[in-house]
Image 1 (tube, rainbow, N blue to C red):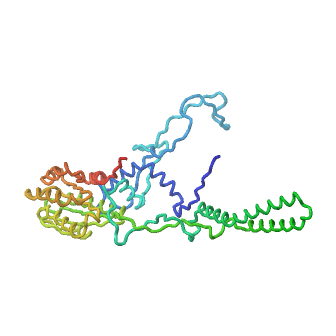
Image 2 (image 1 turned 180 degrees about the vertical axis):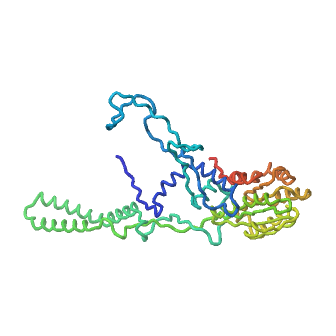
Image 3 (image 1 turned 60 degrees about the vertical axis):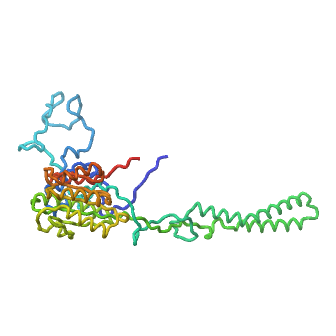
Length: 422
């Protein structure tokens, strides 16, 4: 038997939302390309704005059946002044115009299709298939999140929680309990009636009395309700506190003198993507911003992205501050701790081994994941120290970004969703 499913859900003001989602899936590659271009070409403050997407007309054409050129075909045309039966009609030439770069006085063409993504759609494709690596639920918060879980049945509840099977089972048990004595009594009376009817002489009065009792007994059995409000059983749900996957991200940015404006811009682009990703995808997430040159300082979001302070280079100051803040405010047993560091790798020579030691002994032992991005092509002493450490620390990731075009691909590689192997 064929079934027909009619979706009567309201689509709100966006009447064609299903068609739009289907279309966006078709042109996903073009959207990804536009997202990457936006990170490369836009100013930092405009990264999350809407975006126009251009789709070549050849890629939005719908498949269709039509007559191909050539072959023998017969047509029926209305009368005309040029041809009579038997005349040969010349085959029409191919289209002349049609979207080329040169002007033409003939033919027709079609422009590429352009549409605009909303801000939410644009950000969705920005961070599609990304996640914080190795995020686990670690702790039950003071104000925990709650989850409704099944907890048996209840005699009270709302109609939408009625358990029909359980209610009918309860009704059946009640009918059996109330009706069984009456049914047994009815059977005995019916057996007596059969005996009296087999010898009816002078027993008409007794038979009439017995029939009246049987009739009354059947009425009592019939009046037992099939289902009673007492029988109703409702699915019982209770709220159960759930462990929280709360996390903190440490953002460490080098603002020393060796970081020119172009390198600082690359670092800021990376951290803006990271900040938008965290705030969009995770509810319980805290971000700690640390800027450093010869000394490190924990700052707010505005200072982190817009301050012009600069100086020498001592990278260990940032790692020491991160270690201090972790020990004071973020216990590894209660928090998923992450770190992201951006630098050109140009560090005071004697300080790089110290950075490696702090990272290895005090930070990587407590963090779920640490990402280092170098915004310079040369492998400086800090990169070399970290590279040796990465050989034995799988949750230390290292990438280079030499231009704005590298930022988005590098960001996706660092936070790409991991496929769990079963």
